[in-house]
Length: 146
Length: 151
Image 1: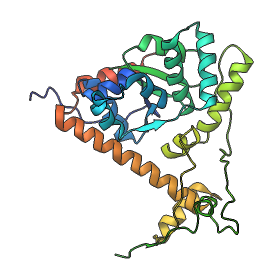
Image 2 (image 1 turned 180 degrees about the horizontal axis):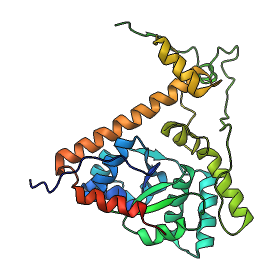
Image 3 (image 1 turned 90 degrees about the vertical axis):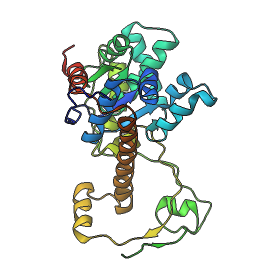
């Protein structure tokens, strides 16, 4: 294995980390250096790493293909989506002018992050996440690409 | 090493309420976040502001990762077990100082939950790094720059 400039782990500056569907798969497949960096920095800082429960519905197949995801989920926190989060998500969607099922899931991810006081969202779709997060003015939520 | 005395609570409901109840069927069903402040708003609708404010009620007073998770929606209605444990006095004093009037059991429960969450995350990160190696300095730079970039 070639190690290019292995880094001393820096503590994450974000107060929480939320994984969306691609974020979860990047962790499960372990094929993203960015995902390893984000998780490692989060561990060093002691910040919670959370998967909204709705992401399980979007991501999992319900069969043996989920083995790696389930292995990762054993060590992550799955956070139930509350009514309050769902209502915030609907407002985020409306205010950002987004619609559709994908936007709904993204909005729930952003609402979950808002409920945790903001933080980073590990995703492959930083544009949509940032657009939804931009509705919130006093909480910092930033997408980090896998 | 002193072993904690361990006994099952007479009933889950009594354990949940933290005291012995004469009526084992009596249940406590509510949990609420205290001392919350509205620190987050959103544009442009007052309703949005109100809603986001509500959700931040949970995050605002957060002291620990576990507290944030708990008040943000994590299931708090777990069945309880009653234990008798012995702690170092300075530790107890620090916990009381941090959590104030909050019941000691609930405070210790939160701290342990936080520690377990972090332990599990550590296990995952160790597995990932063992399998694929640690992230490079460049990967950290890319990730951190995304967090710090404006907009």
